[in-house]
Amino acid sequence: MSKILSVFNQKGGVGKTTVTINLAAGLARRKKRVLVVDVDPQCNTTTGMGIHPVEGKSIYEWLRGESTYEEVVVSPVWRMDLIPGSQDMAAFDLEMASTEGREYRLKEELDKVCENYDYIVIDCPPALGLLSVNALVASDSVLIPIQCEYYALEGLSALMDTVQRIRGGMNPELDVEGVLLNMVDKRNNLTKDVISEVTKYFGEKVYRTHIPRNVRLAEAPSYGMSIFDYDNLSRGAWAFNTWVKEFLRRSENG
View (tube, rainbow, N blue to C red):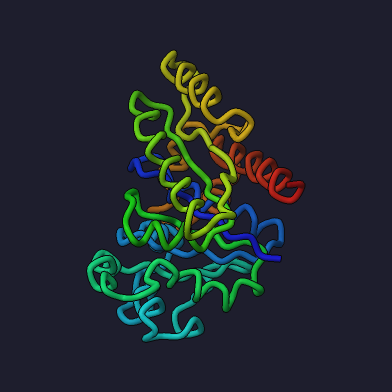
């Protein structure tokens, strides 16, 4: 049975793309069948996986019904497929404004292919618009990356209000998969304060594994690689490998 999750935080700069790519790669390395869906008009996940968006072959045409899944899906690595992003998605909200059922477009399309995968990971834009709503409506759960910095807690209440609104209407089964503390520098007292406050807020939903600040993690997307392919001996690779193990234990044990 497939599990669909959105990597979402309304705050930008929290490392959603890094988390999306390396979660998907970590799952694929464990022989899970994985589909990555790039909903963000910035297309960072697409380029970070080594794919350059091609006109007419993206999520934009797929959601508009102009291209089939088979026409847009690409396979950067074994066991990992990608629905590429498109800058045209920036106009999706306006173009679909008068379309009935517009919040369900992604769900309708994923329902047709989800049986082909163990996990579907959706990278969301850092904003609450129609694209993020589509992702949350289509998902079983939401994974929340949080950067350990001064403004980390800003917007968390709004984020959870968003999840509650989706639960209250369009997707009653939406769950919080977990909260991942990212870009962690434990030498910093502020980091310790953020970890403490996030743990108070989310409790057991916070993963024990933290992802450190790591130059190799920052470099990998520019080469179109996951951290495992770019530098499997780095601190970043070790952390993501440990976290993916924890993710699977929680995910598969309920």
